[in-house]
Length: 450
Image (cartoon, rainbow, N blue to C red; front, side):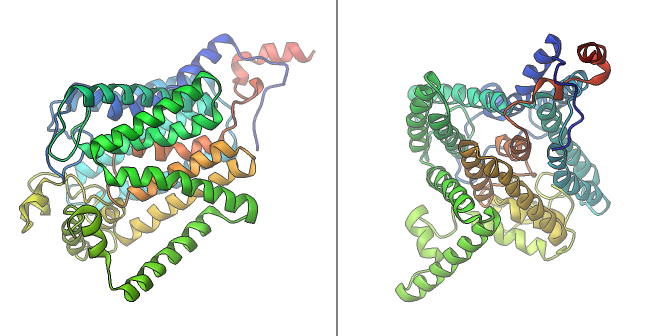
């Protein structure tokens, strides 16, 4: 790693240490908006299988808080970063560039967008999220503290949702907890389950006890939500993370290559088995979901692909399709329910729809780079974190096939995806001399070397 560091004898000023601790909590506060703040203030259950929770649009009564919350945290992260002035490594700085390339295309798409102003607004919001995550991670430099704050938010969320499930009757398709839709409860409970597995093995003492209780509570919430997808991903993601870690350690296999090979084998096996035993994807969907439209998703995807064909290379403009108002093509759909959709319920299809094949190529490049960052933890021998990292990536990339989240939303999934490569790049905590700005404590450092 290349650092510009202070002499080892220089110690951080108490003020800088306090600022570092505050910076470690900022990512958790970003996550808390979708996980706790917005639901507790504004969420009203929506009893439909097709409408999931999303961050509030400008038309919601929560618009003012939505517009203030993230910019305020960005200002705080920027202020703390300037105060600490951390000596970041090239690996930490390199974590920014894949996202920056994607955002550059998102901003450029305003030139051909169906609604240029809306595209710019959404791109600015994503840029603010990225900058807030990056600046706070740089200023903190302590993965253990950042993950600890995030886990604390999930502990609070699980406790509140258990109370909500205990006190309220379920909706017609499952408990919503404190959220607008049962899928949100299942999704966040799955996150809590994966994080709790990590702390069950990596934590100590009381933390392990909390993790054990959280595992049981998360399972209860997923069952209460009747979220088959969340239960499946909560089971598959940790197992996949462990398998990818083992393949990397034992066979020196790249996680990306392992995923590609195993996905190809699984797809080929499904096709061959289907030919032998006479079943197809529709049969599997009917068996698991009770209908062959994936609770309406296949109808939404067919509608989206029809409009992808209109602009296959560059798309309709970043996020400028579903939420742009009356001019959105969704209001001219033959199926009325499509007009209520906030997104395509598939992040990859949404990127094709709004940024075209060029955007999908960049999008997949970003995902590949985020996955590649796991090598830092794997090669560093940090097994518990490496497995958590891989588990979260599998969960995020997999669930993005069913809900639009990474880089096209502002919720918990979007923020954790942004945060992952920064967590992989940092050590458990920088030595004191690596985080102190030379011009602020240079005199003390010089005196220590005399």
